Amino acid sequence: MSRIISPSFLSADFSDLDKDIEMLNGSKAEWFHLDIMDGVFVPNISFGFPVIEAIRKKTDKVLDAHLMIIEPDRYIERFAQAGVNYLTVHAEACVHLHRTVQNIRALGMKCGVALNPHTPLSAIEEVVHLADMVLIMSVNPGFAAQSFIPESVDKVRRLRRMIRERNTETLIQIDGGVSLANAATLFDAGCDVLVAGNAVFKSENPRQTIEKLLLA
Image (cartoon, helix red, strand yellow):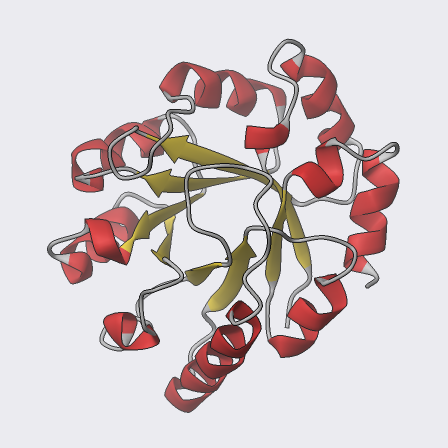
């Protein structure tokens, strides 16, 4: 399995994004996690295409966009044009999830499917073999700095079994409350990608924290 850290820009310093982009470019984090919120699907608004396009110009690393928005199909092409590599949509927000997955991949992006804490794995049984990644939310989406939901670990284990049974190479990402205290448990449970926000950006030495998360 992979070990990838995807620092969440929701926790970055928006008064000096250049500083945080430069920090990540020089770190062992392979991905940039971009939380896109619309204030409807989740009770918060984050940022949109101008910020994504600005980040794209300043890094060659993977842009990992997590859409917490309603009707994400309306914007898939725009995200492709903005230079996103992984585009993750919520199963709860997609009426025709199979079609959405197909459309994302047809535009040359990798496709992720996210599940809220209350959503069972059965919601993605019919598409898990088509998805490049499944994102398990380990907090309720919408805000940074929430406490990790412990039951998420077992959900990851069950998802890893599902992926093995279908003999796919689908990655497992987890987002919410990830820290040095639980990183080892999450990797051991079957996660490939850890999204870390405050754990990275609020630490005294973010690059060192990223290395510690990778070695957990």
